[in-house]
Length: 323
Image (tube, rainbow, N blue to C red; front, top):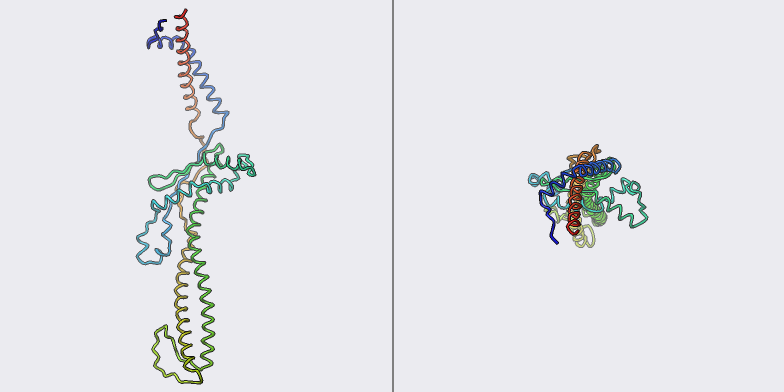
């Protein structure tokens, strides 16, 4: 059996003869594309971007050094942005925002069902995108048929990211402040005990001279005995004074550190994230639009219509040759 001739000339002639059928298929597919565009749900994409400031700029090690802070950049470095991206892409951010916006009710999902919980998280993760630009800014987008929800999702995500990231740094400083406060309270109690003990010894043995060995005080006055065990009392006064003076000096240092951490701990009002672009409610659906959809469907119909005509005619030739 010989193979029928079906070269380029035959293909062009076949398409020319069936051009009306091919165009009709193209018009029908274009019309179907337009109908589907209007009937189907159109997605809207909201966009927002922000840049991160250096969280160490308000750290006590930089803030309370005369020459330290001038070497700290205002903007976060690559390492800080890497840590930030871990928070941005975490499920905790998406889940927190989904709960705040009541997205389970919006998608009609029962949160008592673990499978529905996973489905909600998967939906949010599929529609949520975060990209780090070459200038260390972070761009967040969210796609949804509801344009208002998409914009709220982006803005609420940025606010949640800032809260989580800021709470970490401020929380660490507040923990140090709390530890110092506990230590200062302990030292206050000890100082009160030593003060009472010293006062009783001095009143009992009539020792009212300045005896401060920890302060390296030089005593020129001659101490006179006022009763029995005066030497023992003097040694006890010196020992207690030495310990108390050291406690007072340490307490002053702890209070200084406490005030430093307290100052930087109050930096919660200083934003670590500066919003460059807030998400606006999108008014145009996500591409493709109506015109692009109709043109794409028309081209698809044109291609597959022509392909169908060519395959059909080729098999007709094969059947004719076999006969």
